[in-house]
Amino acid sequence: MKPPPSLLAVAIERNDWEAVALCLLLGVSRAARNLPPETLEEMIEALASETPIPQHKGRRRGHS
Image (cartoon, rainbow, N blue to C red; front, side, top):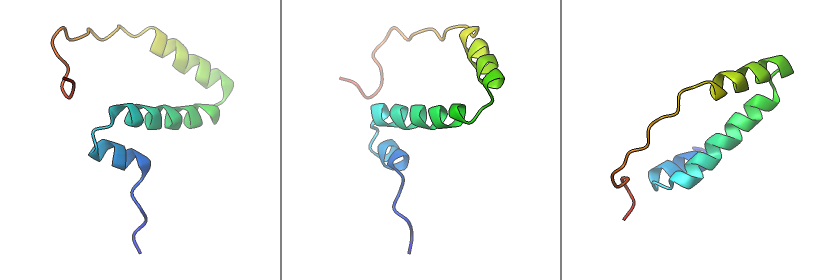
């Protein structure tokens, strides 16, 4: 018997991007919890130093 689809898979199929983002955030949080403290600190520093992604000034897809 095939297991039911994951919450992430269902959210993607339904274009429920808020639920997708929450699933990904939970996954990253669980992975970060298992990292050694120094690795987590290095990862946070690397993410903080990234150049921000420019926001698109037009209408976002999927929103009315």
